[in-house]
Length: 333
Image (cartoon, rainbow, N blue to C red):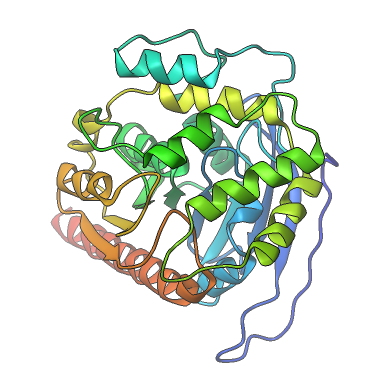
């Protein structure tokens, strides 16, 4: 990690041309260092993207980030703790993935290095470090779980919530398809070398791919290799999994969320079935649900323009509603 490292370029923004302005840096937040990247104008409303289990910020496709930024949004993606170039909790032990999963099924919470609440505070710490009072919070998979906690427990910092292919954690919901679960739990190893890590991830993402938007194994391998060569830490995955699997049911918390909420879920998600997205939307007052046929547990390139459009429209509507509420309050005062 290189604190303060920045890469910034800028070109005139023309209609239909994605803005090139970006910044990559490392910053202290919530007692750790967080690697983050920004797209767009720092004066625009902020959108924070939280990625899922074992995934680095670069799993948010750059073209998706630029498409959001083109809608006059300040887009921030970052590496969670124990992912990418942010702080890793090297040497801190966590219960194995199988043990954690079995314990969660019977209501036993093992001792874990950190929780999803700690990871939510990382996001709040990042906002503090960047001087951002409130932001639109977007999370995918485990990132959606973290985003839900932020909206429920740190509402003054949240303009809107978008939960993508995620879940409330309700244990009555259907789980992953058996083949996906077996691969995730039984093929993962704490001491993978580079090539083994690449192969594991290629197989994992192919199992969870969108059936209507397939990607060749060769293309998947090229993409995964880029992620692994940026950083890989199999032991860190076990710590993140422990935080996620021990997080419990958020359904009651979701009922208290009062921020505009959009829930996006693939109809053909094999890891977190669409029933979880529906139940999440039903649990949050006024939430809008958008189910995408043929989408699995990934972000297919063909869907990126539509996903960016959905989320940008949601953010703009939330900003407009917030301004209207503020104006009405000012008139009453």
